[in-house]
Image 1 (tube, rainbow, N blue to C red):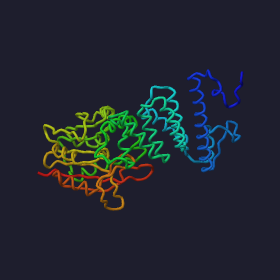
Image 2 (image 1 turned 45 degrees about the vertical axis):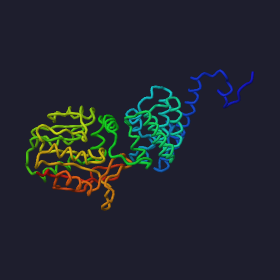
Image 3 (image 1 turned 180 degrees about the horizontal axis):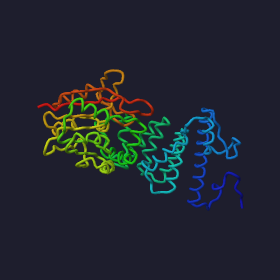
Image 4 (image 1 turned 180 degrees about the vertical axis):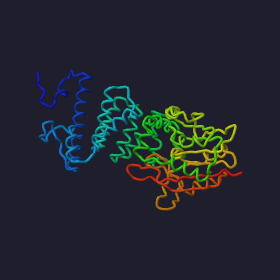
Length: 397
C-alpha cells in the first residue's frame, strides 16, 4: 500500500470524508490567519518601540501576549490587528450564514482583513461563500474586502450578487455600486438599509456618537432654536429621526407635546426608555403625513445624511408646519473650502452631503425663510472634524 509523503495527507487518501477535508482546510486557513495577525503585531511593536513578549519574558512568545509590551512602551495604544471592535461588528452586521464551517471561515477572513491582509481576507471569504453562495451579508463583506484589496471589478460583482440575494438591499449594496461609479447616484438610500443600520446601531448609538465621536448636533440645534425663537414655548414639536432621544432631551422643557418619529424600531425602544416623548411612532421622513393639528416646530438632527434628495422631505415638512412655525435641521456638507457646483454627493461613508446653495434653494421653493445658517464641526469621523451646516428657518404665510 503506497504511503503518502509528508504534507500530502488528504490528497493521497481516497477515503477522506467531507468533514475531515473541511477540518483540514480550516486548520490551514487558521494558520494563515495566525501568521497574518503575528505579522501585524510585529509591525505594530516595531513602530512603537515595544516587543512581543512570552509569559517568561523571553521576547519570543505569542502575538496575543502583548499586554506587557504595551505597558513597557508607556503608551495606551491598542494595535489594529487586535481591535476587539471587529468581533462586535461580526455579531452585529455579518449575520450567521447558518453553516458552522462557513461562519468559521468568515471569522478567519475578518481576522485577516483587520490585520491588513485584504486580498487573503477576500480569498477566505470566497471559500466561505462556496458553501453558502446566497449568503447576502457574506457577499456584501466580500465586496468590501475586494474593494480594499483594489479589486474593484470583483467588488462590484459581489455587490451585484447581494442585490440578487436581497432585493430590499438591507446592506446598502446599491449605494456601494454608486460610490464606485458603476451606477448612477441614487436620490435616496434604500429604506431597508437605513432601518437595518440603525436597528443594529441602537445598543451603542449614544456611546459611539457622544463619547467617541464628539457628536454635537443636538447641542448646536438647541442653541440655534433659542437664538431664533427666544423664550418661545412650542405647542407641538415633531422630532424627525428622533433616534434614542438625544434631541428630544433638549426640547422637552420648551414643548407641550413632543412627538418622535424614526424608521428604526430599535431606536424607538431606546427613546421610549427615556420617557420624554408624548408620542413615538415609526415613520419615514419622505412619507411624513400632515398632522391634524399643524406643528409649530419640526426638528431633524443629523437625519438628512440618510435621505439624499431633500425635495420631498421639505415639501412634507412645510405641510406639517403652521405659518410662523420653525424648521431646525442639520446637514453634512462637502463645501469645506468654498462653494461647490455639486448640490448633493454620496460619500464613501454612504452618507449624503449637501451644499448651502442647494439647501437655500429648497427652503425658498417650499415657503421657508432662513433665519440662521452656520457651518460648524458637528462631530469627528476617523479622527478628523466633520463639517456640517446648522439651519433654522421660518415657515412663511
